[in-house]
Length: 210
Length: 210
Image 1 (cartoon, rainbow over the protein chains, first blue to last red):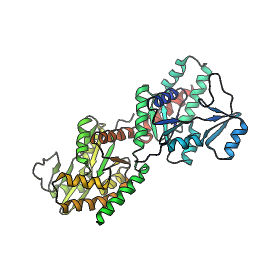
Image 2: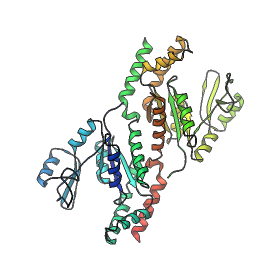
Image 3: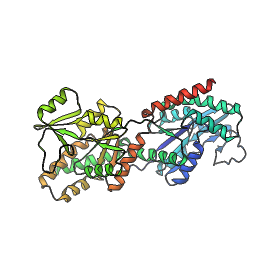
Image 4: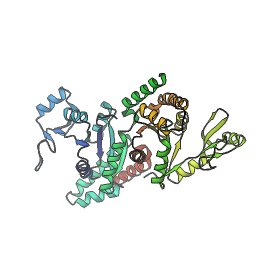
C-alpha cells in the first residue's frame, strides 16, 4: 500500500470546537498524524510558544520565505502575515504521517489547487443555534464579538460545498472517531494506490503468459 | 444527516474471497446493509434457493422486466440473462440501508453511469501469486479452470482504476472493518449532505440578519 501521508485541511467556524477536536485526535493517534504549525509575523500573545502555537518570525524572514516558495499558502491579515511552511509538511508526509493544516477556506482552496490530492474536511456544529449557544456558553466574549463571529460563520458557510467531507461536531469522542475513519478510508482510495494496482496488473499479465 | 442509503457495487477477482467477505459484513452489520439479489434465467444448481442465491425467472419474465425498465443493469452470458431488479434496491435505499450489489466490472460501470452516486469498491488479494495460491488451495478446481480464472482476473484488473476504493483482502476481519469504514465515511461526504449544508447556511444567514 501507499506509504506516503495525506495532506489534510481542516476548517470550521470559530466556536465549532475544532481546536479541542484536533488536540484529541493528535493525542489519541499520535503515531499517525502531525499538525502543521503556521508561521506568523504577529507578536506572540501571553502563553503562546514559538514552535508550538506558531513560528514567530520577522516580516523580513517571512518575505524571504515567500520569495523562495517555502510556503504552501500564505495570507496577509491587517498588518500581519500568516502561512504554512512547506518543509515541515513535506518531511512529515514523507515519513508517512498524515499532516493536518488548520486553516480557513481561502487558504484551503489555495492548498487544494496546488496539491489536488489534499483532503478537505469541514467541521460544523449540529446547527447555527448550537454554534451561538457554544460561543455564548464560553462566557469569555462580548455579544459584539459573538455577533461578529456569527457573521463570519455565515460567510464561511458559503464555501462548505467545496470541502470533501463534513464532520458534525456533536459529541467530541464520536467526532474524533469520524475524522479518523474518514482519513483512514481515504488511504484506500484507488487513486492513492496506483502503485499497487499497476503491480498486480503486471503480475497477472505475466502469469497469464506463462 | 442524510438518511437515504448508499448504492455500493463490490467487484473482485473470482477467488479473492469476496463471497465470504460479504457474508461476514452482512452478518456483523445486519441493520446497516442489504445485499441485492440478482434475477437470472438460468436453472438453479443444487442447493440454490429462489430468493436467496437468485430470483430464478423465465426468459419471458426477464424480457418483460427489461421492457419495463425494472432492472438497474443486466447482461446476457451465453444463453442466460442476469440482472439487478430495481424495486428491491430502491426500497432498501429508502429504508436507509446501504445496498450492496456484487457484480463484475461491465455491470459496475453501467450502474455508475445510471447512478453517479454509486460507490465502487474493488476487492483484491495482496498479490497475483496469492490469488493463484487461494484458487489452488481450494482443491476443487482443475488446473484448466484455475488458469482460465487467472486469465479472466488479468482482464478484469484492467478496469481497477475505475473503482473508488481498493480493499486488500488479507485477513478477513480487517477486510470487513475496512469495507465498513469506507462505506460509513462515504456517508459524511459533503455531496451527500447538501440538505444539512443548505439548512445551516440558511440558519446562519437568518441569524446574521437579526
